[in-house]
Length: 64
Image (cartoon, rainbow, N blue to C red; front, side, top):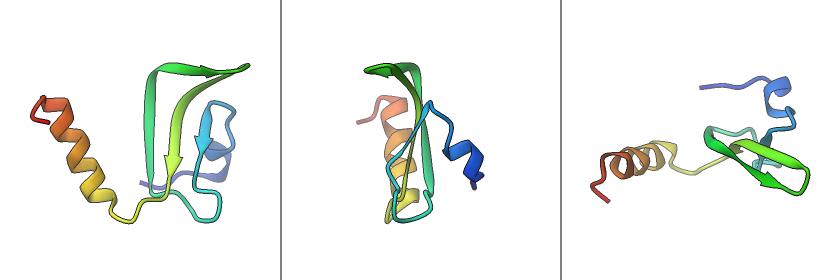
């Protein structure tokens, strides 16, 4: 999935892919408060986003 620059600049998005365009975004529910900011999503650039997604699905099923 691709995100627009405007979406990545939203205050509730923590963009950890500073030097590259992110290829994953994880929604955080409930949002995590960091000082005066509520983080509702984390964007990052991963080497193997498919393996990351598979690991998350495994955790969601309770297999991990």
